[in-house]
Length: 197
Image (cartoon, rainbow, N blue to C red; front, side, top):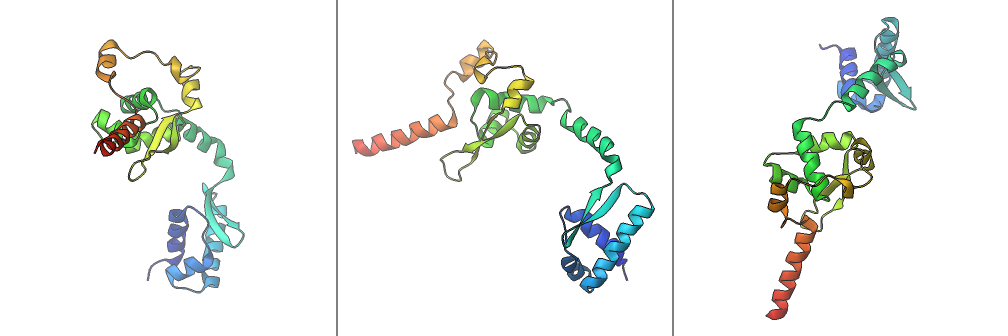
C-alpha cells in the first residue's frame, strides 16, 4: 500500500492552486475527514522540520506555498530570471516584432524560419511584447507588438525613434507590408474582381 500522506503532498505540489479536501479524498480513496487529517499532519511536519515550504488553509481549501522567511531569496532568483540578458533568438524576434508590428506568430516564424512560441512567451513574460488584438483572418490569430517597457528598456520615446534598418534590409523589405494591410488589399482585390465580373 502506498503512502497516502506522500500522495497528498504530491497532489498539493502538482496542483499549484488551492485544493479542497473532498477532491483530494476522492483521488486517494479515503474519507474527506481523513484527507484533512493527512493535510494537517503534513502542515505540522513542515513546521517542525523548518522546511522551505508550508501548507496554508484558504477558506475550505489548502495550498502549498513557500515559507515567508525565504521571500528575499526567492525574490532574488525571480528577479535574476526576469533580468536574464536576451538571447540572440530573442533579440531577433523582438526586432521582427518592433519593425513590423502588429504581427502574428506565423509572420515572425516565416521571417526567422523557426518556431518562435517559446521566445514570444519569454518576451511577453519580460514585458517587452504584448498581445495587440487579433487579425481578421480565419482562426483570428493573435497580433503582437512592443510595450512601453520595451521603449523604456531601449531608451526610445516611441516606435518612430527606432534606428533605421541597414540599406540592404530596407531594399529587401521595402515592399513588405503588415499582415493587416496585405489582408485588406487581398480582400479589396477579391471585391474588385467580383465587381468586374
